[in-house]
Amino acid sequence: MNIHIKSILAALAFSFLFYSNNLGLNLFFIAVIVVILLITLKRNKPISWKYYCLYLLSSVFVFINPTAYSIFIHFMTFILLIGKFIAPKNSLYISWLIGLINMLVASAANFNKRERNPEKKKEKAITPKTLNYIKGIVIAIGLLFLFTLLYKNANPVFNTLISKIDLNFISIPWLFFTFLGYILFLHILNPYHPKELIDTDNAQNNYLVEPTNPFSEKTLKKLGEEHILGSIVFGTLNLLLIFFLTTDVIYLLKETTITNAAYSESVHQGVYALMFSIVCAIVLILYFFRGNLNFFQDNKRLKSLTFLWIGLNLILVTFTSYKNYQYVEALGFTYKRIGVFVYLLLTIIGLITAYIKVTHIKNFVYLVRTNIAVFFALLFISAAIPWDKMITSYNLSQIKNPDINYLINLGDTNSKQLYIYTNKNNISNESKQSINTKYTNFIAEYSNLNWQEYTLYQFTDKNIK
Image (cartoon, rainbow, N blue to C red; front, side):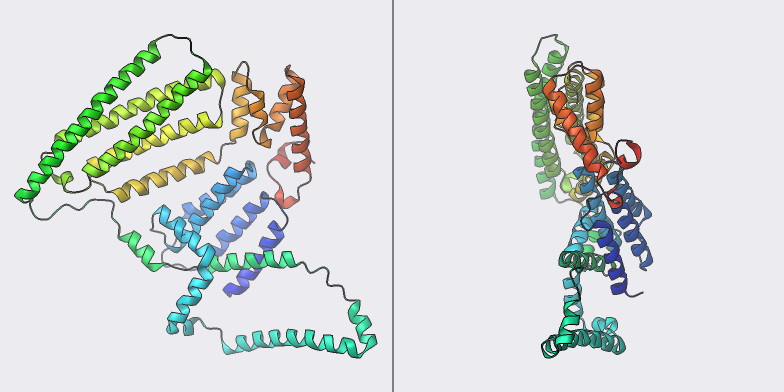
């Protein structure tokens, strides 16, 4: 089937599912259509099935937990799928870039490419018979409108009949929306391959290249000086960090009464210190282990000090995690406190990849590729978690005096939990009224959705009709 026909049919389905509708079940159906269309296209280098699965799974996340975050992750996965479909071996960040380029300018780029490549243009040209059909239809429609206008003024009976034709059923916004769907699927089915970008990324290796010739005396002297400089820098920083960790241990073991605001400030300052420490560590590691010093035989002392620095930062992560855990245990979860845990986890991963970079003589590209891949994996997994519900459930069940106002200001998905809580506990009338209003609006909103917009709530909440 011609890609234009496929694009038109897919655009009609796209319009039927999404026009004037919110995102919900329709996102899963369109994801299935996209996957089917991509599978039908013949590829020399087929894409891994895991990207199809990730894309479909992200649409399920939206169905289960329709939040702005889960929707964002779904579209990130969609762009990734398109990028990987075009160039399966490329890095994630390059795949996102390729996917985004295709969604925006694939038609224009392909047209320009065909104009510059006459052989390819001739190869993909429309057959004369098809071209005649298209010309005939376009000319016939134009003449039909022209002569209809002429005959209307010439014959009152004809004018009366034509006036009775009601064309109000034609919606210009719907036509425009469907046209955008056609462009979208045309870009998917006839993608643009930025060859230079793809080849450049594929040519990048994750390893530093060892010099083939022995180091000259001048080079060895320079490497020795760099080794001494690096040893002094990492040695000094290690001593400072050891002193800081010692004071942190004393602070954690000492039983003192501290206000919530002061404890919050302590946690945040610890995170800021850790953030600066990790950035410095990565920059210094990249600088000193950027080239020949990796292959310098007498670099063991610098490597040992570097590993000690990484280890001490891991201990700092542990202390900061414990302080944040105590904070959560006392006051409950918030998005900021969850964000601290996420950052600490990413910090651990960053330190591990820095360790691998030094031990296995990897380059900067390896760090970028690996950490972006891990970061996206963490984002994707977190999209499966209904955070508003989780925060509400923990705070209401584990915290003696939960911050009800904070929970009210979260998304609507925790409305039922708060509503049940108000019926079992004594809270202020103002909070109770806010919760009742929130729950009523939630039920009303989800009860008035079309089937295309259905989410898991329509199948699990009896109050939603």
